[in-house]
Amino acid sequence: MTIQSPEGTRDLLPDEAKFWAHFKAVASDVFGAYGYVPIETPVFEQTDLFVRGIGEATDVVSKEMFIALSGENLKRLLDGGAVKAKSRLSLRPEGTAGVVRAVVQHDLVPQGAPPVKLVYAGPMFRAERPQKGRQRQFNQVGIECLGAEEPSVDAEGIIMLMRFYAAIGIPVEATELLVNSMGCDACRPPYRDAVKAYMDAHADELCDECKRRADINPLRAFDCKNPGCAAVMEDAPKITDHLCDDCRAHYGTVKAYLDGAGLAYTEDPKLVRGLDYYTRTVFEVQVTEGMGSQNAIGGGGRYDKLVQEVGGRPTPGFGFALGYERCVLALQAAGYAFPPARRCDCFVACVDDSVRAEAFSLVQALRDAGLASEMDHQHRSLKSQFKLADKLDAAFVVVMGPDELAAGQVKARNMQTHEEHLVDLAAAKSLLACLAAEPSGTEPLGIAEVFGGIGEGN
Image (tube, rainbow, N blue to C red; front, side, top):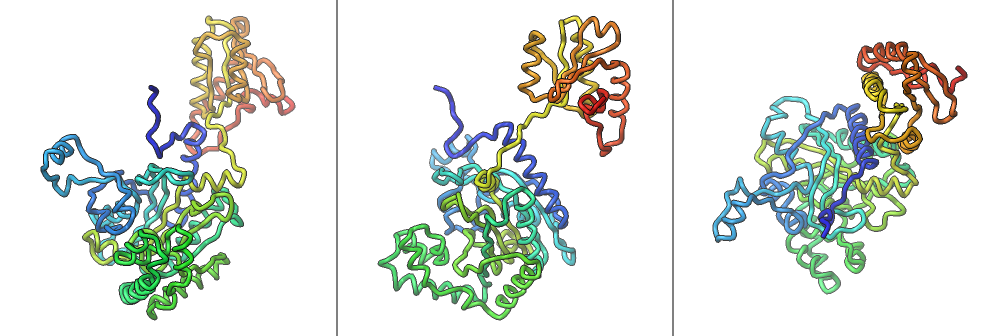
């Protein structure tokens, strides 16, 4: 039997793998303009990090985490033994907890220092039922800003994310930005009690899962996809009616900044994020058409208690994550297609094997000059080599034969216009050597200029 990829995972084949690299590069450019610098953390962490940081009662921790065990520890468990806390590991279900752990461990926000702004990208893992837009291994890009509690940080992050979506090609008119405040330790507990009391009064109308949530984390019921529960929770108390003065002022200032930036948004008092660490500002970006119920493509908010939860000093934080696969679905709904991964500026064809060494040398010179080049490695006929060049979408084919080579020439053909002429090989190599010696960052010449402007009237 042929071995397939694990359920809930998929391969990024060359065209999409190249787009994923482009996706990360655009994020680096957009977020870098706001001062965000890269960080890489392990794909697995101590399980306690997620239990303490995300919350033991969340679905992510209680149901969806993949536990990572060495063979030795698995044997120890099967034999009835225990595994040490530092050896209890889980694949990361999200990126924030690991970044915060790194910030604490390496003291990236010392007392009195300016906030640290970090961006990450990579795979996350959740043991969910696979469906369109929801996988067990998925990719995220995210940012974390630690050390500043001003609402300007929240608004800046939201604006930055929306600019990224525009830069990557997701139409603004196809998205909706939802914002809310989840309050703080002063105002959220009474609000939770009010929601619980409401849910208890409507218990016979709720699903079993929401009945359980009423005792553990009643705010999670706002996320339930059961239509009956959604109808019940529509009339539940709203957090915006229970905010303390400080949280109300913070939320109002965030909205004022968004208004000043001309950014459209919808206030959604039922919006809660699925992780326990959020405080005050929360937001989510959804695609309005073509993605069904899995239409959230990114979101986040403020988490002013998380650093303490993982053992650090009190340090305010704000962050968001955007799902790569969801963004791809949004792009495809807007008509986007991945560009080909392979680029071929020039294909060097050999008339026979006697010129292969010289052809190999020319291909290397072309590549050294920054021009993507290929040659045949399977002793194909000249006709088959031209077919291969067509398949590679080569812009030019340089034909090298013994007679031309004896005269110090090669024949170059523009594959679009089919114009061709003889080119002095020594002159072409000299120009390529000059291009290879140009300082990094210099705008390179195109292949047409190297071979005498073929197709440009020469």
